Image 1 (spheres, helix red, strand yellow):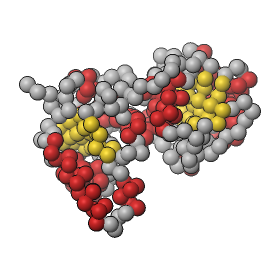
Image 2 (cartoon, one colour):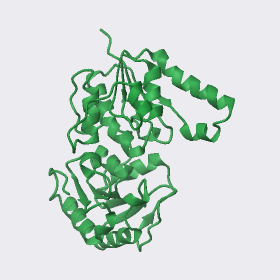
Image 3 (cartoon, rainbow, N blue to C red):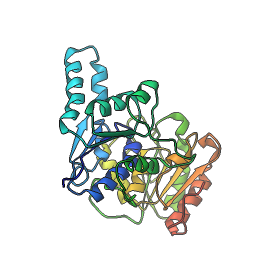
Image 4 (cartoon, rainbow, N blue to C red):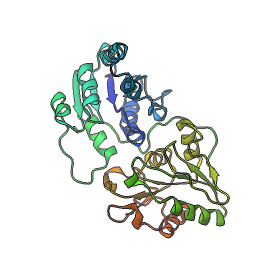
Length: 317
């Protein structure tokens, strides 16, 4: 009997795609020869392991389509991309995002059985069966796993399959991600500078990471790679770190996926649902703003993880 085929739909964002990799890995662990197609935005495809995890990627270039939204060639490309999913004749399909565009992809693909983890709008809610609500505080990784579990029984892996990186763990390297997906989630750059100075004084090397829109954090002795390297190289730096520090952003989820201890500064988001999914992590949160978290708190959490005191413990808030 052949393995059931699966369509996994998660276009974006980077951290959410990393969290979706746990569900993809659970499928791959049980069905090593099964067909797994991941529908994803090209901006996020670098975090999807393509050698062992997925059979293929179905890329949905939303930025390109948006810039040419009135072009007939764009309409044709969109139609071909969406309709191309149906030719796979999927047994199962799961929408782990719940937006109207991802719901449409799942509906058009027409798998024999389909489920969505939720819906952000009425149109998405009407297009596909919805997973029953989870208790408050259920982590996104666990909810994704529950959705996959509507098809079959799966074991939740400790860590997901991630793209391989070169080089081993550097016991003296600490990486810091300076930005976040919104201003409300960001931590003050001057506090990252304080933390970096404290770590350097203790003998660690500190490298700043971030994308084109993230703030530059200058401090003596810091290596600044913000907006200087592509996503795939950023993953390598995170994976080689002894510790990663970030606000509520994608690199924190990368660290968890690669087994790197992580300190996360949270603001408005529900850390029970969106914290890095790891036992080697500390979440710092005080109300709905990151400004309440001081540099000394982050340094103390970093020192605990670097010394191994927090190893094997649950995330703290």
